[in-house]
Image 1 (cartoon, helix red, strand yellow):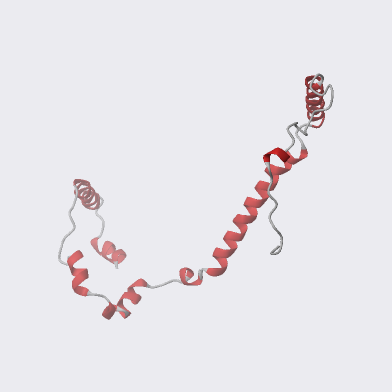
Image 2 (tube, one colour):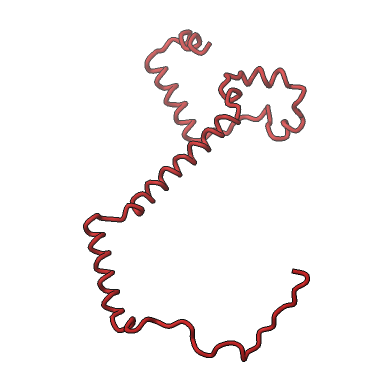
Length: 149
């Protein structure tokens, strides 16, 4: 308040005795009362098992985490348009229709059209086995060509 003077406290005005006192005989039977109280609480816990709040705490945490997961999943499903991912897209047509948007020189730096793939010994062995089978079984070359087309 603006018109009020602050009151100064002097050291002499503070009483020297302790105003807080324990009741008579409090500490003499304190250990006995403490042991009795602990024994009563332990007896209650063994009769009823865990206190209800300890059991409910884990169930509430599970429910809260499931709710959070459901809200997060709903948010993803609601705000991300999945229909663009579910369409069947013909990528060859998409590239052909948008060919002018691609930098052909940049693509040719990474992909050599005239390069032949390197063959491994496994590829050579497989090819040899297929040719040997076809020759030994007298398979008609015309049938193979029909299946390839």
